[in-house]
Image 1: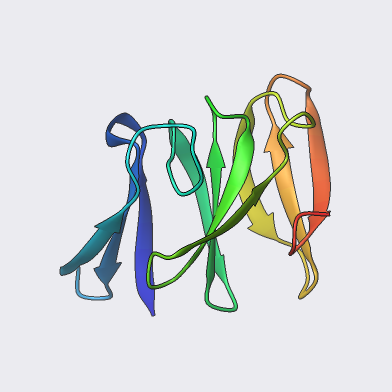
Image 2: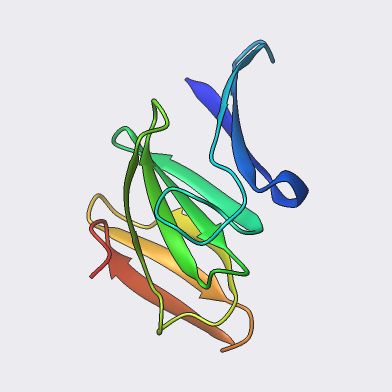
Length: 109
């Protein structure tokens, strides 16, 4: 078990072990695949790290080893705030600007 922290101002995710020891960080500022812009919400499920991004208006997905997988929600989300796993097959993403809760499959559909 590890702890993943969204470092909003530095546009990255930091990973710590259960004792608080720093393990790694991943991503950098930007809008390309694998880059983050103002990450906020983070949830880990089945070796995937799901990250909401305010400025890129999407959810980016990484492996727990920091490898980028894919992103989703562009064109649907305006200001994604937080993310949670609501079952083994679905994610709930809160969208602050749209005043709604969006439901996605784990692969972003």
